[in-house]
Image 1 (cartoon, helix red, strand yellow):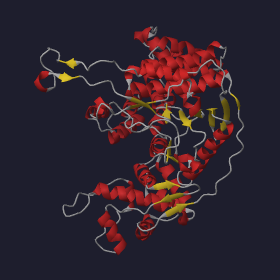
Image 2 (cartoon, rainbow, N blue to C red):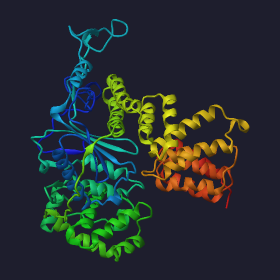
Image 3 (cartoon, rainbow, N blue to C red):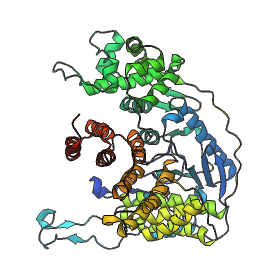
Image 4 (spheres, one colour):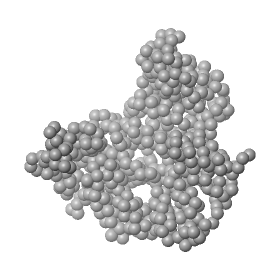
Length: 577
């Protein structure tokens, strides 16, 4: 699921969905509801205004009273301070675009929304139709006749977090009289997303170990509590507690960090992967334990550097100040403790600076609410495609309302452009994105989409030799792509398109031009298509040493046999040394 906060028990309004997918797709019963994002139609009648504030790097748009909004933001801040005690910002996904938090008072849902929702969810009346199959005789039921399943039921999620490739928005419907911030916690999915999408990608041992550790960690009001660890299995855990020599020993640290698994022993009571997964959690717990003193900072640095360099003994010693043998001794001594002990993390929480609210401008309301409704489109297309057009219409209405009132800032126009891209209307999107790019900086994905649309048009109307782009044409596509590179997060499709531009240009790239692809490969070494494009361009233009290095990276990380064959063909084309 996509929740941002979990509530124990539920304190926000609405009916929680039992399933996030179609019953027909999952094989569940047809009466299992499909979860949809909230659908709120603004009424022209007078009501409480939307309020706006900035806090914690978030833009907050709220239709709750200011006091309730502050309580939600303060709870949000406290939870993230607790998370930072075990997962610093440097190890999480970074976003240049401010994250958005939209709060809506449950009691303010307009009657217009309820009427629209009722029409959206209206089911046909009368008896269920029969399906006789394509021939009128076949079909899947007994005797060739089956009853057509009724349309799926729907429910609306009161607390939802949606992402684009460069932004995040959280929507919460809040009960003003039943909001208890002590019952809120960050969800596993939220933390997992922020961890897994961090660029460069963190090493597998950290991802596996931290997420397993987090599953066993509870948010209390001012602390985190982590339950005792299980070592591989309950029986092996008991063996560790009893000091039995039957408990599996630790894998040597060098092998563990390199994910080098030993052959499966037929007599063993566990497999090497189980062993590795348990050791990754042990390693993370050892690194983060509050009784370890300065070890935690060293552990974070080791994890961060391991995303960019080989996690060998030299790097380990650089970060920790001691070698693998000393670390293995510490881990072996730590294991009997961690299977018994509940660990508490009690950071010194800082008080959030006062949050100042004011009425939202037309531009802020249109951009933030419209961007949220744009993000809903992709979610609805996946889970209830027959309703997607309603969400497209709603997003366009919200964005156009601000546009028609004269708002012309770059951020609103960028969202308008992305909305049209997501709706499949590239021509309309191009117009908005071109204007936005002139007015000011825009978000990374908007820069990318503008470049993509320019490139597609130029390819259709190329005037260079053999239908290739001229150098001037290439620059018009590369300029927005390089603007996208200056923001967070890095987008792999930006580097893919840079490679495509140079492959389509009549002017040969210099080694300096292709250096930007080296950057892309360092950030996304597992993106085989990008590594291949970079290797091929270097080889084609005579840069054999970089091409050989890139082919090596590709062969080392590729799993697809077709792509492996392509890398091997490039390798055969390299000059013999």
